[in-house]
Image (cartoon, helix red, strand yellow):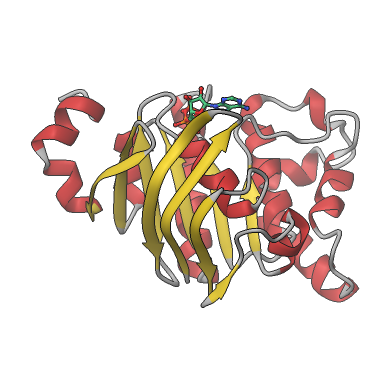
Length: 235
Ligand code: ATP
């Protein structure tokens, strides 16, 4: 579904991605793990077109997408949930969700999907008229994921969904991520510093260091890999 080949991305003179190659097959959950500053967010930004790569290729369902503007990439079904949620704090929960479906014209489908996300996260239905900025961190993360689902993603890009949240909330959110993958057949590319969590729900994983992929394997193999255990699992 998604393939990156030798992707190189810069911020001015700083090269953040130094030739990243990876692939995500339809129906998979793929986790990209790595330390602070390794280039995980930049990988997502390169895919979604927010920070376009300078070299290399990115294909989605066989077609090149590098160089396309972000809104066209969204219209293909590649939807990013950014780090730090980035919900609209002054808009209500419902208005935030409406914006997720901004490019859609199928009113009935939108209504159906709204009911669906309220089923996944009932607290959002209770809070539907509340300003997004007054939600707790966990609820904001639920809203950010739900807003992305309102765009009917084929490929969901999740950036650090566990960041700053209590373990119990994180567990709930990760259960829903797995449900979205299993029940809706949505392909998921997950970036996480919490390697333990990320590998537990993934089919395969990649390890990134200093802008390059240093390891790739099934999630099960990565979890027992000595280098991964030592560097990322605290074992
Ligand atoms: P974190 O987990 O802390 O978000 P990360 O693995 O996602 O880290 P990136 O945010 O992709 O890492 O950063 C990769 C490199 O690019 C880092 O060296 C970072 O300092 C640099 N970088 C990221 N964003 C910018 C920017 N807007 N301008 C300049 N340099 C940047």
